[in-house]
Length: 447
Image: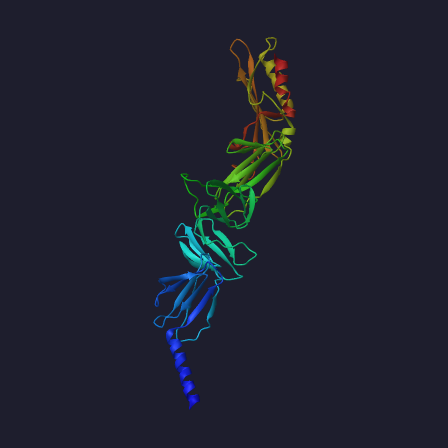
């Protein structure tokens, strides 16, 4: 009977103690951590309980929800059920770091370890002995990346940190895809690139590929400077570049009748166009070529050395002021008209085998064309004699006609040039060596 009585008293005692509520000693691992009692059904704060360590009596009418918090750490919420038996000493650890992140512009996207978390502001957590990488991105701006560590041997994460995207970023889309991109003269790489434009500064971007004209663009990120850098920019290399060199190295290079270089020239060929180039030097065959940058034509070469051939017509002729000029030759009064005509005819026939027209009465004589073919041109030569001077003195007008038809002329349609193709021949300021003394001999004999 006594045993049963004692057991009953013991149970009643325990019930009385439990009804009175358990007292817990709750201690945080940081002496300045705060203990805050929360309302039962939300996380709103009801009462501050203390810091570092508190003695707390479980309330039978409450869920006993307590938040332990310290700036720079992720808060911990503990709930102590009044119906459970708890050890008197309770330990709470704040180990997860928390950084209050805020950014501008407000619509910039915030990523943590590659996962989008939000915009404008977030709480970023870093578990104990771990790291987390923050990225802030917005199209048209250079992204910001930072890694935080929750480790004793690394820098302690800040409680809060503000980031502002100020540096601009241009997505440069390059064509052809292997074009080399340089920023302020420093090679970035080949193909598409993200070009950073620092706040308050300007940068120069160039894109190069052998055989193409360089692309150059300046982007500025300065207050009040228009235009602001674009989000995307197409760098299309569509203008061809041909580096021309000549042999000999002092030949003249002409485009559309204008001299553009001597010996060397960087020829730019716009997309969809053809450029006609003429290279010339006395004593060499004139060079003609069209360089085209068109889809249905072969691409122009990157470089071209133009080796000019010696001009055979030039080498077999001399420059003369007497070519294609009507020279009046007065006849010495000691000669009769017949004698003068005979002397004149004999001189001409020593240079030209065939006389086409001979009329002593009118004093008119023409020779047939003498034709010679060379690697540069077809040369035709003839003599025309007519009466000249005044009525008081016998005189003859002598004209040595020297003309050339270029074989390389791009405007020529006919494949073969004949002596009768008058429209292809032009006066030539040179005469063949064999006719060099003709006019001078007539002047010497008749004057």
